[in-house]
Amino acid sequence: MYRPFVFIALLMFVISCGGSANNVQNKDKGTTQAPSAGDRTVEHSSAVVEPAVIVPIFDADSAYHFIEKQLSFGPRVPGTDGHKACAEYLISKLKSYGADVVAQNADLKAYNGDILPSCNIIAQFQPDKQDRVLLFAHWDTRPWADSDPDESNHYKPIPGANDGGSGVGVLLEIARQLSAVPTTVGVDIIFFDAEDYGLHEQDVAKYYNNTTSWALGSQYWAMRLHKSGYDARFGILLDIVGAPGSRFLYEGYSMKYADRIVDKVWKRAASLGYSDFFVGEVGGMITDDHYYVNTMRGIPSINIINCDPDSPNGFGAYHHTMGDNMDWIDRAPLKAVGQTVLTVIYNEK
Image (cartoon, rainbow, N blue to C red; front, side, top):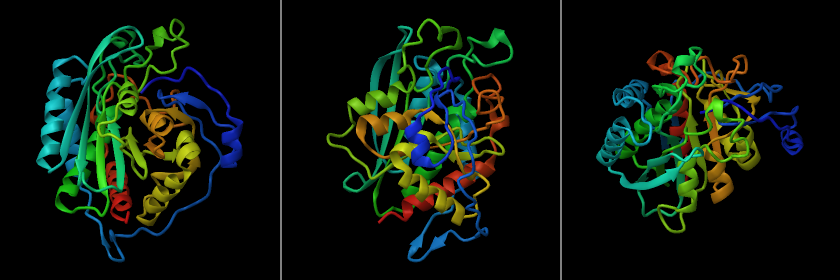
């Protein structure tokens, strides 16, 4: 993720959402709090069974373990040994769950000229089914802790527990469930690479006109699909979903391109008793992997991402720092996100 460096008020978004002006941000995830979009709180339900639909129980301990495992390889910066080892692990784990896995390798050029040996990892469950749902997260880590309070850390790679690891951990647990209980529709899980190699804070002035330095892996995939003619009903991005006290707001680009999917997911969360996490308020617009899936492929996609409007960067004190470690991972939001997404996809007919 990256720190915000440009803020633009979008009148069209304000009109469509019925709220006050929201900030447009790059995936640095700085976001502002907007007026509440309504109280959707419902009584907590202990059951995860709907009429004629049995939804697997999401295991937050398993997701937590998957995050720990990623961190055991060290920072997952493209071109490093940790990155290579983690890729092998992710591919092997997805294959063990019966997925048809595609490793989409490419040398991607970063904004500063660095060449990034990258790998988008695509797991296809029931690949012969035409009707599909897309779930995705980024698995690489930020190469620079450029928001760390200690300036000596500004060119050190972050551990990436929450920013990168959490979304992948949740999706690995979902993959484990998909291997045991098939869905009616086909499901694709993509771990996008080279998402977090965007502008270093010190380079903002020099490369200010570069607006596409983030999410390089999803841009590459959008131009070179893993399967000719690929399409999906909708997509769900998981990013920064593990912090204690997480609050998932209506992200701006999600509302612009996929408000129907936002409504679907937040209603499911409310029905499961997770309204404390899935908050009915409009947040900022965040340039993230879902932006390119929406704009370059036309697949209506949303971003489930934690926002902290009270923090200086909008995401939390750990963000883009050396402190993004397992201390910032809590099983409660992992459970809320994982169970909600499982319930959504198992109810697709």
